Length: 352
Image 1 (spheres, rainbow, N blue to C red):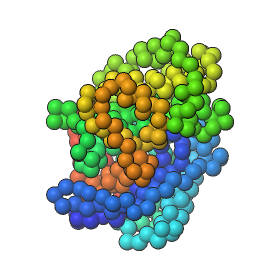
Image 2: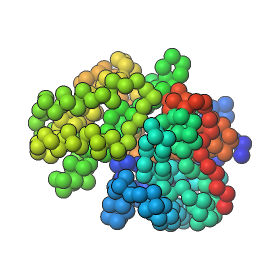
Image 3: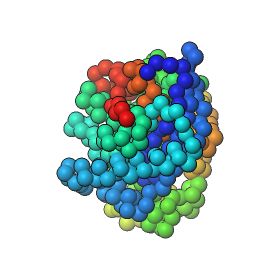
Image 4: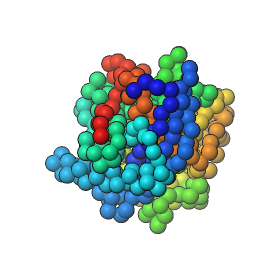
């Protein structure tokens, strides 16, 4: 489907479990790509879906298939409601990431629920989805996938940093795009904020009130992952195995863990930024004033936090864009980023 204008809906559910992000956008191609976000919203998960998704890693494959069918149907309902609410017509495609259940690229496995063929029937629209599987089959990490969007949509920045469940960064290095997960962010912070009765640490105020203990901070900063070279990526499995046991064994108060881990996030991000570089920072963590201030105090770099729509919906926007590239059979997955054997056009297309 080669044309110069596309009217699409992008759908994303991330590891921080904030909800389903939906973006209605138009993309235009005239030697380079531009876009316009028309509608965007996040549909929060019910307690049932929050608990179900949080526990996916513990389900068997048979159990996952049942959840997958239910989640696909639920996702279809959410997307249809979004389309009806905003009176969206003449849609070229619904481009959906689904929700990651398992991500073990070292074992040749990645599984996102919500990507079943019935989604196209439920929506009566063309669906592009399941963007990670092909990359893992080609020997890649299956993540991060956003960098092609960073390269083609946000080329005026030296780096693009997303602070969601994990911090991931993309940048050009020696005329090649590289990107990788830096460290966990909200997937850890939200857990301890919830233990204090909050959904998240608003602007990092709880962390700021905590005390820093260097023994735990040094142990976190010394983790082997941080010395590995990209391509590399993180998943909930690694956090459960490596991060949470370290934090729990410290026996520290939640506010102190939030302080130490927030400082850890800022330390790891500052380590990978270049002095005097300019970067776009998005994702829920962009609102964490404490972490942003710590990054700025650790490295002299220009941090640009854009409009609310871009902060909160950049990933959904880029998955919409990945779907367009797939429809055009153009590269949407870079081997320099994921470590796959070749650049490729990833995803599955389901026709209504």
